[in-house]
Length: 177
Image (cartoon, rainbow, N blue to C red; front, top):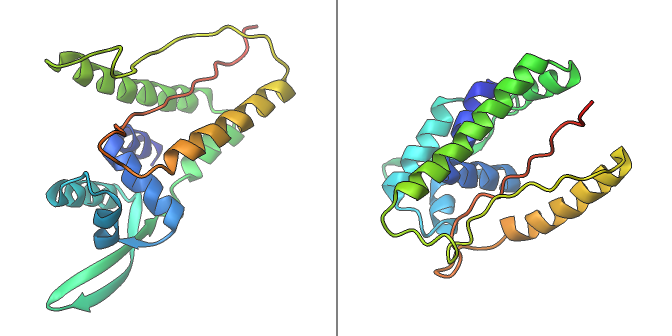
């Protein structure tokens, strides 16, 4: 299952849809369309179907509305089991595979961006950097908590013409031995 999760959530629109479903708990495509006014209806339906086919989300309810069936979706409860197992069992090979798929998703976003004709790296605020740090485990946990709070405030932003969809990727490498 973890291969499907990383592969699908590396796609920004699917990640947005998934995290909205995860945040709300249960939601219909109509509610998703109301939330994501910048995503065309056919595109949203295609991404919901892909998440459903991959068993990342599931149908938890159906309601007949004027000849059509409105489905309610939620996150598949078994979603994180493989990731949790990899972490708890210190499965190095599985962990590296998760990381590799994550990086491929990020590289795909950068590739698509760099191939576009109208890029403006400075104006688009695209960047990446590395900052070597020395820190205790406690200091790392405290920093990650603060970073998480900052990121969550941005995740909750509604889309507007001024707000462009971006992916903020955070990688903390294991300590060097």
